[in-house]
Image (cartoon, rainbow, N blue to C red; front, side, top):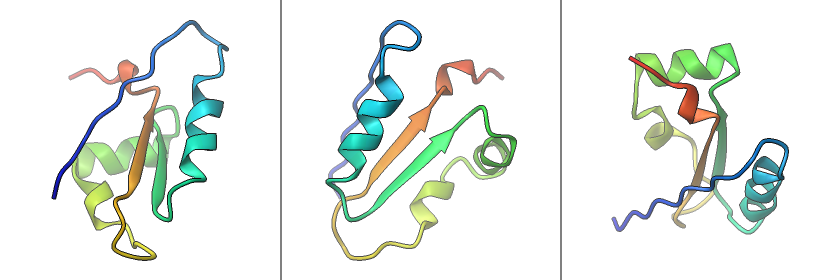
Length: 74
């Protein structure tokens, strides 16, 4: 499967999250992940590839959004 990655950067409160949520509407399969949400943070720590196991509506390429991931540190 061909995978691509896009990074969106900009100042705080510029609309980055809103933009990604608007883009997600064009995908049959999308997942929004936010590092600031404790349960979602646990998912990533326990299984870094959790997003590959998400239920899909069809076989189209999914859009996976990782928000606030810059806060991750080892």
